[in-house]
Each structure stands twice: as structure tokens, then as C-alpha cells.
Length: 111
Length: 115
Image 1 (cartoon, chains in turn brown, orange):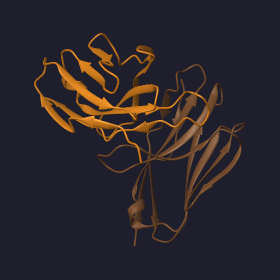
Image 2 (image 1 turned 135 degrees about the horizontal axis):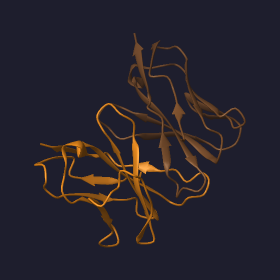
Image 3 (image 1 turned 180 degrees about the vertical axis):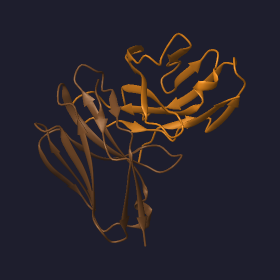
Image 4 (image 1 turned 60 degrees about the horizontal axis):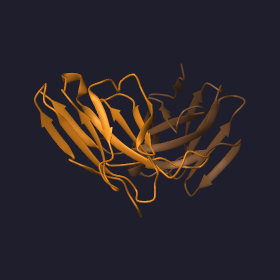
């Protein structure tokens, strides 16, 4: 199967940095997305990686290592509003842009 | 910023009834999708649609489900005879293409409760 694994829950303090990891099967890999999802709302696009390395976008950065089947999402200067689920989703070749989602990491930011 | 819109936001229906969920994808997008998320579970792919036909579907998308693009703007998901286990948030999504970097944008979702 095309399993996407990420931690279930994480907690962090306002102003701190947190790293959310994601691992996936490397066979057929064709791109990795990170989405943010607040409870009861739609996934909102955060970042996209298809080549190795770091993509930076303001307070959020995402890293990819294709050979290791590994990505992380880095959130800096955490704010209370960053409390949400963070979804790792992988596109595999052969699918019509279908995304396979991980179960999501629920991040709680405390004062 | 362009967005995917969905109606209704919430629907309660009796088991066995037909339900139609409606979506207006982003206007210049060519690929359309339905995903669902059962409460507390992961987002699951249902179906993708391109050039007026289904391009891929999951095991969940059985004969009770159908999709249609009745005109140039709407994209609908029909569940013919709802079951209790169809209760979920249904997300419509669209993308400009399938090439690298073509992000999939999600609508706000339609929350379906089958009683």
C-alpha cells in the first residue's frame, strides 16, 4: 500500500519552532504536499516539494529527501492560530493527480 | 483569490435517500475531484474527473456514487441511496493540471449526516 506516516499529536509553545515529520513509500513518488486543516474546515494548501531540499514560505518551510522517503514541515514563531492538524499528502505517478493523505498531525500551541 | 465553492454546507438525510452535493471549481481548472473525511479519520480520495469523464476512482466510489458536470461551471456528486456509513465531510477540489506543481485546492466541504 501507499502508507503515509506522521505523528498523531504534537504540542509546542507560542513563539517556538516545531518540526512535523512525514515518511512515505518512495516507489512512484511524484510530489508531496502539506496542508493545514482547522477542525471542521477544508484543508488549506501550505507547500509543495518535488525535488530534494528546503522550500521556504514565510514562517513555514518544508523539506524533502526523496531517497529517504522523508519530509518535514517546519513552523517558526508559533502563534496560537497555528493550532490545527497538518496533513502530509503524496502524489504517486500513475494516478490522475490523486493525493494519498496521512492521518494528520494535531498540533496544539500553548501560551 | 479564486476558490472552490460547495453547497450545501450541511445536510441531514434519511438512510436510503438520494443526496446531491454541488461544487463550483476554480474557473480555469480542468481537473476535478471529490474527497471525503469521516469524523476523526484521514482525508480519502473518491474520484477524479477530467474532460467530462471519470479518470480514476477509489474502492469507496461504488455504484451508489456518481459524478456529473452538468454545465460549464458545476460539478456534482450524487449518492443514490445513502447509508449510515456515508456520513462524512465531502470535499470538492480542483487543479489546473496534473503536472508537477499543479496544486489541488479544496472547497469548504459539505457535511453530510445520514440518520
